[in-house]
Amino acid sequence: MGCVHGKCCTRYPSSSDADSGRRREKRPYKCKHILTQRSLELVPVPSHNFTLQFSVLTQHGYYPETVERENQDSFCIKTQLQGNPNIHFFGVFDGHGQYGAECSNFVKDRLVERLANDTTLLDDPLKAYNSAFLATNSELHDSEIDDTMSGTTAITVLVVGDTLYVANVGDSRAVIAVKDGDRILAEDLSEDQTPFRKDEYERVKLCGARVLSVDQVEGLKDPNIQNWGDEYSQGGDPPRLWVPDGMYPGTAFTRSVGDSIAEKIGVIAVPEISVVRLTRNHLFFAVASDGVFEFLSSRTVVNMAAEYADPRDACAAIAGESYKLWLDNENRTDDITIIIVQIKGLSNSGASATDNEVDCRPMVMKSIKGSFDTSSVSEPEETYGSVRTDLSDTQQSCQHSVSMNRSAAIVVPSPMMHQRPSQLDVG
Image 1 (cartoon, rainbow, N blue to C red):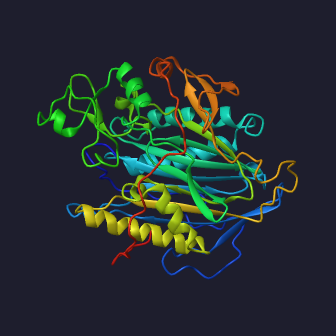
Image 2 (image 1 turned 180 degrees about the horizontal axis):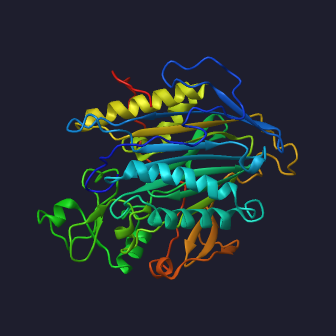
Image 3 (image 1 turned 180 degrees about the vertical axis):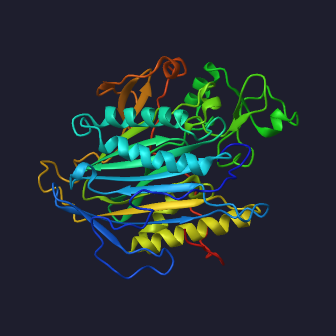
């Protein structure tokens, strides 16, 4: 879900390693996939003797009133960050507003550049990640791009050896597949930051935001009823953020990069970060824009991806199904972008614990007033430590201490029936 004004601007050329089509560190297969038009790509992680096999697909949305509208999604895949063969970056950026494409492309380039140039990345990846987001947000504000009513979400995964650092701002999502006996489970690595979340609702209210659906703003429903159910049942008219005395900006998310007007009512660029140590039970992870998750649950995405040995096939199937479900439910589609990264050959041979003893649950880093509260998924009350970071006075003023006890493992609806779309374009 983007701003209430839609996603309606053109995309300027990108320049990151992955989406520009330039040669990357590993390109072992020359044959391109018929739908993704990409070669299957592999990159080793020599420190733990496993390989990442990955692909990506981006599909521009269909808007019947603006058929020439270009894709506002962008993505970045940067392997061997800082020249280190054990550090790899995967990110999806979902732009919104009149200059959403410019915002998403700016952020995808600058965020990874910030990380690549941070000499503290390996010593303190959490602080480096947080600093990269905040610095990129400031740079976007100071750039020639008008981000007053435009911006981008960002869902990113940094692989450092056998550890994933997942930083999220907005309502795009990352999910990982975990083998559990004969079953494959889906575990969210991020949680959508929207007013549906009680903690985020309370935080933006303290920053002065009015939280109302479009029907409430237009007087069709009682604005005093501050209960919208959940995003699965009320996704058609979700709660949005409005300034106290106006009918703007109408964002359906509570965090983003850019959106300088919405920032004044609590829409911040501070990421929530989860940390996962990979084990042999982790099969693959997916990073995708909300164009995928609007009608597909995390469970369904994992189920579909698990059916394919080739991540290019998995990307094409999930993007195609998402596209079809959009048209089944609405007269348009959102932009759709998905990266699937398969984890090959990880044995944890150097670990002292057995598979059953290794805790595969994400540890969720919840940023409150510049510090990170760390808790495991199933035990959100238990604190393992905190990492101090420096925030500006403005950002601190809209980050009140609100209870944020939550779990990254979310119960999602039953998988939907899979049908193939009649149309799929490739970005």
